[in-house]
Structures are given as structure tokens and as C-alpha cells.
Amino acid sequence: MLEKVKNKQKETQKSINTQEKGITLIAIVITIIVLLILAGVSIATLTGQNGILTRANDAKEQTEIASVKEQAQLDIANWMAERLKNNEDITLDDLTIKNIIEIENASNSNKYYKELQSDKIITPNGYEILYSELYTNSNGGNSGEIETESLPSTAETAPFLPEGATPTNTDWDTGVTIKDSNNNEWVWVVVPKSVTASATDDNQIMEALIDYARDYRDSFSDTWYSGCGLEEDEYGEKYSTMLQSIKTYGGFYIGKYEVGSFDNPVTSENITRETVIQKGAYPYNWVTCSQAEDLAEELATGGKTSTLMFGIQWDLVLTYLETSGGLTYNELAEDSTSRGNYRNSSFPVAEGNKYAIYSNYSLGEWADVPVNYDKPSFTANGNGVLLSTGATEDNNIMNIYDLAGNVAEWTLEKSTETDNPCVCRGGGYDDIGSAAPVSGRGSISISNSRIDVSFRPVLY
Image 1 (tube, helix red, strand yellow):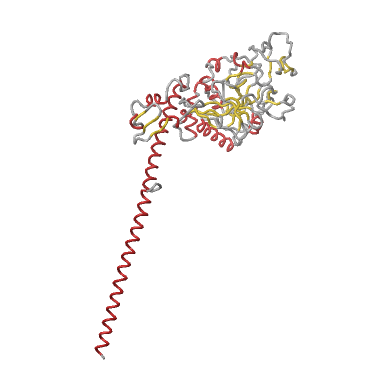
Image 2: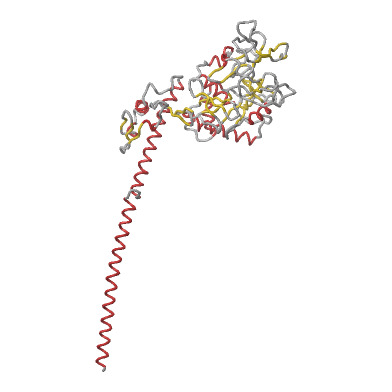
């Protein structure tokens, strides 16, 4: 009996050992299968169409392409900036993008470009970039111009289009203009992006702009003072917004016309009128600088900021008129008689406009320019004559009307005269063009409102 029990135990143990060996083999097989599956998944994750390695290579390619595109666009911008500086044609029709890039990178082209072909760039790692991916004009050519929201744009300037506004002129040669949702009209003033390209903060941007417009600068400054129409923190915020906007877009908008009203002419007792930036309005005079700033802010549109012009913006407008509008420094800073409505200027004014003659230190009644006037054309000669906004094409430069003469215009610039900190610019209808050129500055007290001073806002 004992022997039978022992034999039974041996058989049981043998069965157990056999079962254990069987379980171990199955586990190994399963483990191998799982590892193979994981390996396959891992390989697919690394090397598949959306694998890590593939995406890493794609990211590397896109990074290099973006870097080369940026460098190419910078080369084009530098080329254009140099020609703007020298008052040369800034279109690229006379040179292909390929030639421009070769010119700008003669000494270090291998650093950025492996090869420049007629229609594309080959990057150092062999990636291709079509020139059409950089800039194309409305005709599809490589001229450095693209269309953005129906407004033209170049490497140096990209006008924004405020919400609700529509372009009314897209010709760089005559001045890009828009009409906002209130039918007010604005003109884009180009400030090349290359001017502020290396600036990283407001102070550096301002320094770059001052250097760019240095011919028209003065001891006056863009500094806050009580009575300008803004609290100090508001002034600082708008000042910063203005500078950053110029750097971002390569310019800003200025009112096409001096601010006016289609209501009865404004008088010293009657300054509450609807404001417009439109042709044929009575100039909005008899306002202090502070009142003008309040009215300018109300003209904001499409989510943008509107204020009186900062001093640097006025100087940038003059620089723009010189570099793009064909005006000379003498016409802007020495004698603007031929460019504005002054007491000593003469020019035709079409029927349908309005005028009021200044004599004996008062302004006469407003009247329509008559059909059968006793001269071949209406002239502003002898007595000062105040005109409705945009009354003559003779005083239109780059779609900006009456910047010189007619009425001087309030700005946010601060005078060095303590008792007269407010600054107006541009001269008025009873001034002499050589005594009050368009770059000229006048110092006025914060409480003063005048018959010959109005305002023109900017939009940024």
C-alpha cells in the first residue's frame, strides 16, 4: 500500500511539472508575439507617413524653407529701401527677384542659398522655393507686389483695411486710399518697414523714425502735457500703439481732407457739429487742441485708433511726399506757396465749391464759387480766402488735400514754449507761403481756438 501511495505521488508531481513546462512555453510565444506587434507599431510610429522621423524631417524642411524665405524677403526689402532712400523707382519690374537676391548676397549667398534659378530658389539642403511664393503682383509677375484684402502690399508696406472700409484707389503712384463705413476717406502714408526693422521697443522705433524724417525735425517733441486732450496714461498708450502699428504695417492712414462739417459753418460760439473727412465741407475751425483731439478720437473706425497727428507722423508725411510724391525739400520746408492755399497763392477752383474772403481781420460770409465769375478762374490772391475741403486739385499731393495752407492743423506735438505748448502745423489761408510752409510749426496756448486752425486725424 505504501508503495502505491509513493507511485501515485510521483505521477502527480510529474503531471504538475509537465503542466508548468507547458504554461512557460505558451507565455514565451505570447510574449514574442506581443513584442513583434509592439516593434511593428514602433517602426510605423517612427517611419510611417505620419511617423516621428517623417514629421521631424518635414519640420526641418519647413524651418529651412521659412528661414530662406525670410532672408529672401529681407534682401528684397533692403533693395527697395535703398531706392526709396535715393528717391528712385521702387518697383521691381527692372530687376528680377533672382538678380536682387544675388546683388544683396554677393558675399555670402552660399550661407542662405545653394542655387538661384530663373523661377525658384534651391536651399542648402535642396528644397525648392518658387519666387511666386515670395511676392507676386496682380498680373502674376515677380515684381514684389501682392494683393491683400483688395489693397496692394509690398515687402516694405502692407496697408490694413479697417472693418467696413473699402479701397477707393490702389495705385501707389497717386496714393492708396480707402473709404470707411462712415464715408470718411483716408490715405495710406508709407513708412518703409526696413526703417524700423532692427528696432525692438518703442524708444528704438521712435529713434529710427526720427532719423528717417530728420530733415523735418525740430526741437519740439512728442511729449505729453496737460491740455493736449489726453490723460498722461492715455497719451502713452496711444503713442505706443502708433509706433508699433507703423512698424507692423509700414505706415499709417491720414485724413484725405481736413476735418469739416456739412452743417452751418463752425463759429466760436457754435462748435458742436458732425465731423466728416469728405470733400466740400466747411473746415472745422474754432476748436482748441483739446477739443480737436476729442473730435479726432470719435472718427476712429473699423477697430482702429484715431487721434490728432503726433509730431513724428507729420514729419513722416512730409518725408513720404518728398520720396513718393515728387515734392522738394524747398517746397515743403522753405516756400509752400505753390502747394497750398495762402494769401499769396493763385490757382483755379471749380464751380460748386465754397469760399469766404478774409478781410479787415474777419471772415466774410460763405458763398458758392459762381458759374459766371468775373475772372477766368477763381483765384486766391491778395486777400486771404478760406476754401471748403478739397476745393482745388492744385493742392492735392498723393491724394492728400490742403496739407499746406487753407487752415493750420492741430497736432499732439509739444512746443518748447511753456505758456504755449500746443502745436499747429501747415500754415493758414491768410499766411504767406514762405513764412508758414507745410513743415512749419506754430505755438499756441491750450485755451486758444482760432479761425485759421482746424485739424486732420490719423488712423492706426
